[in-house]
Image (cartoon, rainbow, N blue to C red; front, side):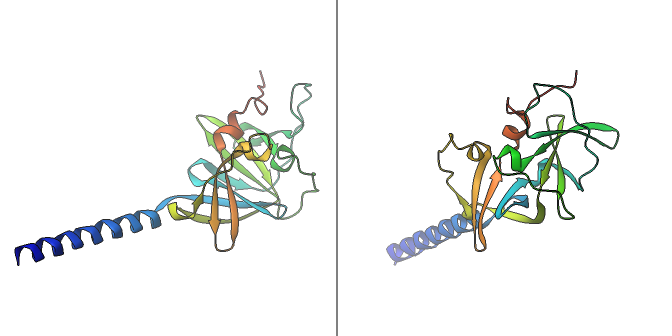
Amino acid sequence: MAGTNTSSSFAQNNATVEKSARMEKEEEITKALTFAIGEQVYGIEIPYVVEIIGVPKITRVPCAEVPYFIKGIINVRSKVVPVVNIRSCFGKEEIEYNEKTCTIIVAMNDVTVGLIVDEVLEVLSVMQKNIAKTPDLNNVNENKFIEYILEMNDGIKLILDIKKIVFDHDLMFRLD
């Protein structure tokens, strides 16, 4: 009887550990704001998103050192914010802005940047079970900005690494 009780207790503990592991995989890690660039869906983790606005008047910065995908600067609540066209940054053809085009204002370590996207879609819960391994394709321009990939029922979403977008040496420029 004592042996049966011990094996029963072991089985219960094992089941509890397995259930805990399953729940951990289903637990929300963070949330991500998703947006479209053409047919591809991308995302940015919510803690970095300050606000979403339309495409305001952009002031071009006449400087030879400004990369082509930095469209200029905008004024957001009395703060000068550089604006990056994500399409251009990823080597995609620029399109004319329309009523769905938005600027996502992101911030990290006191640096604020506006990201122009084709369309903002939704906020998703990021679950560990949906995160896929990111392929090591650093020679692909778009891939160097990917933090991780979400495999969802409705398709793949590429979650961007805001640190690389905000602080990448190709994106940095100063208005000194």
